[in-house]
Length: 150
Image (cartoon, rainbow, N blue to C red; front, side, top):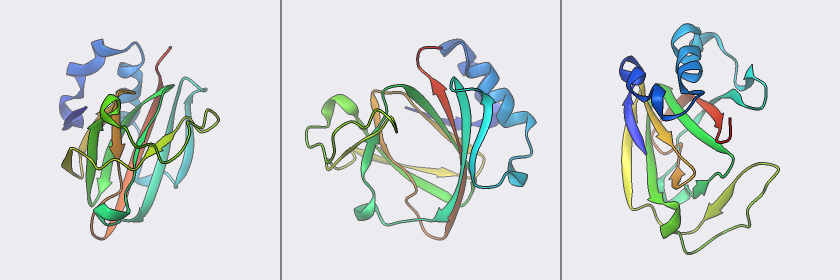
């Protein structure tokens, strides 16, 4: 898991062949003008999902993990206090892995919480279980999904 600001995102380009394109999209796009929902960038290899919803309590958030996609979760409005735990340390699955949605949920509690303010992002790899959308008030964010196998 990485927490940083969009202004410093260039330091992560070497970590994956699609990161430069993903961060380029985030820097070059008027993100405030995007409607909630899915937005194409590069087919199934790279796409964005805009979310806008009220934050929830920590107790209502479940850890989730993905196998096929890496997440860059950039907060646009509000503070998203995201829970985190290594996926390998999750021992209490709440669901089976859903391959169609690339998601599995866990009943394990997060090992830590990361307050992510507007203008900052969390980058989650498949070995990072995360519990997003925790906070008070409205949270608006864009999640860029990057295919692990680019």
